[in-house]
Image (cartoon, rainbow, N blue to C red):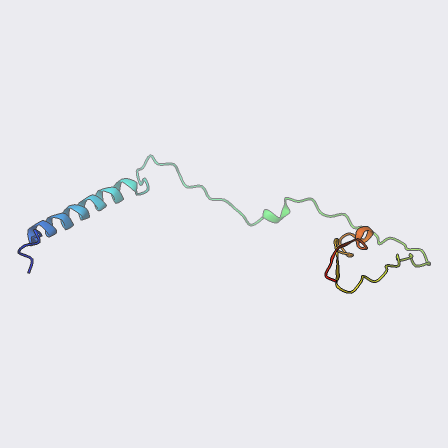
Length: 102
């Protein structure tokens, strides 16, 4: 079976052993430092984090006039036409049409 392929059990076992050794060395070199002279760990107290913003001052609601404000009267759009601007986002330009299908 494997006679003509050039692979041998000894060669595969040696390559496997060498790759495990190299992986162990790389892992040991990239592990975190555990020496006595390493930087000390810092503990951060995050419990009082919400007190950094100043409190919002209490405001009184505005007094409105007894007369209701006049709402602008819009013409209905034509059938098959789309407005270029949203009447809610841009009320002053809500009457401008972009294109019509008919």
